[in-house]
Image 1 (cartoon, rainbow, N blue to C red):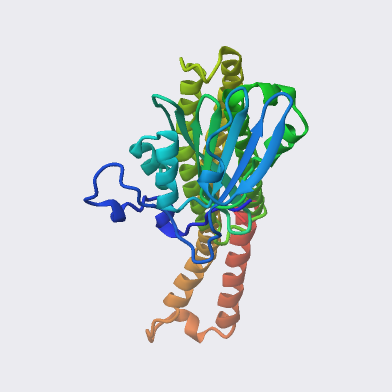
Image 2: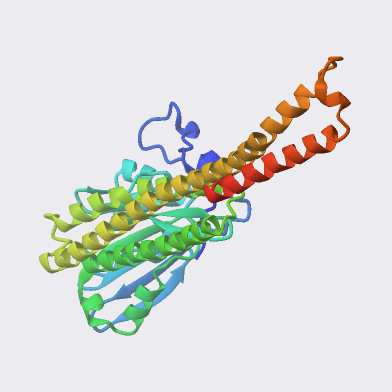
Length: 364
């Protein structure tokens, strides 16, 4: 699966400068253009209960006109950055210019809109790079019509191959479920992948926590902060998915039939579980941060305690040396032959006594 990789703060902010001053509905691609990007690819699957045909076409005209119901046409467009191609789709399927604009704006918030002749859905696919501890994202746009469904993706490759395999294998529920059930299957596949992404994030947090427990916290605070930002980004894009599923679940459109709405309720439950897991990980991150600061504080306290004990031991010794360092002529001990070793013996006994006392108190 190919995902768009972003770096730095640009990942969290939209790139809309190219659209400043343009009228609404202007088809301008907003996203990361790549020199090595593959050309746009269009694949088509046409099916019903007894028939399934799959092919790749080079231009939109090779698909039109669509075959009439009950045949369902699934059109998948990969690497969609061609504004002219989007304009052709808009003309062929009577799509609103604002809808086409949203397809090219890859920083869109997940949402669902009911048009006059179709339902438009935006959601995100995610992946987690364990080595770099970064979440990458790709926007997917669905246009759901009475007997057609169009998916627009940023790059080649997706998570929808299991759906294609089920269609090829003559899954009657999918073959006969219409475009509403196909939309459910696609969205459910993406939402299920959220659990895999969160599982990878959880594994990364376990590694960090284990290193903290093993007293190896070097540079871990930066890693914790980095993953926390990734989770905030993930939450920002997953939270609206609940609204999207809820809108589809309660849709009055004939495209989303009552039996299909039941399946969308199941997907809605999955999104709730994803959000609960996400919140759990955010709490766990907060706990790891507190643990890190506690470990650093305890280590500093241990260092200060050792230094304090050493200083305390030398305070009386310093006092004795200071007294006998005074250059008074009439100091009685100066004329005693054994005064020097006696002072040394007194200092040793004082130091030994204080060390013994501190050990009994459990101070070191």
